[in-house]
Amino acid sequence: MTPVLPVALLPIGVRGMKVLNRQKFLRNVVVPILKVSDEKVSKVTPICKNYLLKLDSFKPVQTLKPNSENSHKIIHLNPEKISQWMDFQDSEREILQKCGITEKDFDSKEIQITYENFKYDAIFKAVLPENEDTVSGFSQIGHIIHLNLRDHLLDYKQLIGEVLIDKIKTCSTVVNKNNIIDNTYRNFSMEIIAGEENYIVSVKENNCNFRFDFSKVYWNPRLSKEHERILEYLKPGDVLFDVFCGVGPFSIPAAKRKCKVFANDLNPDSFTWLKFNAKQNKVDTKLFKSYNMDGKDFICKTFKDFVIELCKGEVQKEFKIHVTMNLPAMAVEFLKHFKGLLEDKSLMEKFHYEIIVYVYCFVIGDDPYKNAEELVKENIGCQIDNLHIFYVRNVSPKKEMMRVKFNLTKSIIFGEIQELECEPPQKKICIEKDITD
Image 1: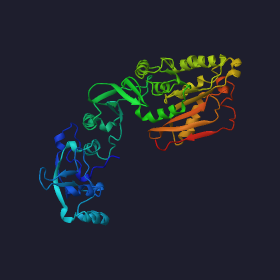
Image 2: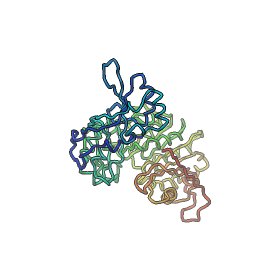
Image 3: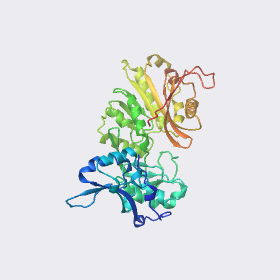
Image 4: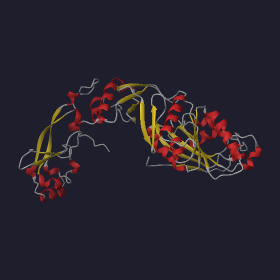
């Protein structure tokens, strides 16, 4: 957790600043100190640990008189926690006294604080409008920080961008999203508000390196843990059909784990970077095939042909088939293509494979688990047993991203299943939660 800067040390006189003036943050303040001889510092500092003055680019323990024969150290303390000797707890004062530190060693000192000593959140708290939402969070993708600023902050966007570049050393570009993701390719328009115009980023995730143009493809670092969860389900020899694969966060690590992967994305830029990343990560080309197709065509052609070939094959191998559908805004709309996908009923007796679907969706309402269940069943158009519903993340107030996992059974894929309008059979719904995420 980032330490909270004492109110007494916050910048003053900068409220409403729209053009960053770093000199305006310079101020002199008086803080409490302890004077300690060099030989006692190692014993005294742990006692003062919770009281230390913590600022960026500032050492709370400093030498009083450098190059002096009788060198002493000054321990700078937080003025909001300590203002006098008696503010130490009795037990702490007792230990300090055993170390030879008494009230006479407690003093105050004027120090100068500059822009370099403030963290970005302290600067935003001092500059941006009071009683309004501030820059509460952002995503970092490689060297790019991605913001979604509220309207009342747009006048401050240049200052916000410059501060973030100053304070986050791995950042050289700050962008602000201009609109919601509502186009075919799931990318959004953005503007650079600070730094260099360079959208080509490099990201490492699940032991794989990804490179892509962030302005043309979709990537969300908040999904890293979810990518990892799905990969844990995959075993060497399994097969993955990634219907909306993007630049490969599911597909490429899966292939590295010796899974047979069929990766598809409609966005031509995603497809280009997918192939680039597969090559960059030295994916075995025998295990990896990439496609630039609509999701419907990928299911009704590539996936269908694969299952037919399996059923016609003489040798029945033991492996699972996984289907990931990470396009939460509309992935459920593609579920209908699985129902009755295979018309040739003669293949049914040879269908002995476990096919697991992981479909993602956005839901709104007070019961996201129930809403996700209804959304999936409504779109596939039939009853599904043994749904596993998992909460992925919060998107916005009352809007959640959910993952629904279910088996694509022989009955569904050959169209011999009870329609949704009929009385539903007894079913089991498994709700999964990860309170650590």
